[in-house]
Image (cartoon, rainbow, N blue to C red; front, side, top):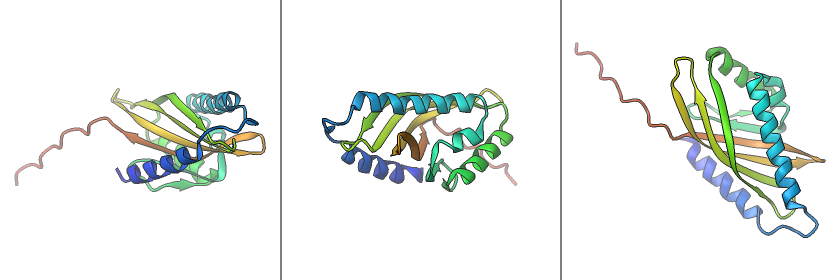
Length: 162
């Protein structure tokens, strides 16, 4: 649960920046553009294209996952994703975007939603995520992606008596 304070701090920062939109910004179009990046990411996830996913991130982009140190930069992100797939080759993942907020300046966005994953033995996990985006030129790039599991942990198995 170490990611919880980071998650809420980042979300509070972005949502503070996501006030009323400037008349020059087409908020609906920017929201659709962010949703398109997320949908493309899901396609890349299903195709097991770690390089493609890593390319969606800014040079200083970071992923935060429970029980892992953050990974920063496309190379580290690609390596972490590749290692995760190698460790659990039958795992599947998916997500649903629930909300996208666009900053008034049109240069930052926050996506929130639910994720699910199934492991090789059919175990199901799921939770919530927040993805922060920065507009780089005309493209939306991922600055940070944070997720938390809300699936209850398996009951602890007592150690055998000695």
